[in-house]
Length: 349
Image (cartoon, rainbow, N blue to C red; front, side, top):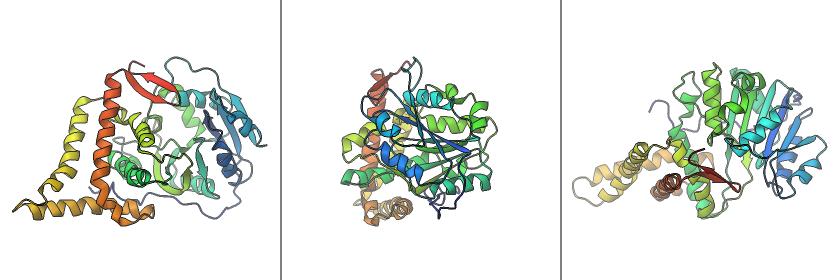
């Protein structure tokens, strides 16, 4: 594949703090029961530079999220209204926050994402240099357990296979990818596409937003970073399963045909080489396929500074992801489109 979806060449790391004024940026943070992490997120923003405006939309939290955010002098807390029918919770919170934005740029930041010092200036400089209307960063997911190390780098790997960054970052409209944890976007572009109301029921809101901006004539960019850090702990297989199953079938457009195609491709890529390793006459080809499979994963392991022997377990991770995708489909067939943060989105929404 000439666009090299397995490569990690699309990345940005924080530079030295440049003293760049940030008063042209408003940060919107939708927060629902994030009291344990939002303080770290807000301290990370304070370290980015002067003039930054921060709005936290407290989305009907039942914990101390609003109190923690209110303790920061440069933060405005907006109390979120109840969720209307037909809206996804995060998008409804962002829409309420957007009404208070008066700056040319808007940073959409999840409540559990920490920016390391200098990262926002790097993001802004890259956006200006590349003349993009939308720049997003896929956060570095925490790896504290066996399940994290097995599945989270593979999550990024499969996302890049599904949404090749090189094509998404080009003018082509075939692929539009975004990472919702950290997005810097032109405020007037948001207005042009109808803001968050234009994607109000989207569960994969980041890619939907990128697609809307491309359709409106804007240019997008997505990359990786080790300096945009997810604070959310996973730790267990069950927590990763919940994260994947809430949107995996959505990624396939709720298509049973595509689910069967994905199943066939996973079995072909991972199951067949393993099954043929000991079979006479074809075992050399099986070993070549096995080695090629591992080589394609090595750039991701190198980027996240993980031991390369984790590539040996890629077929195990692939099997688990295939199972989680089927779990997502079964939920949908049972009438549950997605479930997150105590909210259930039905298949008919």
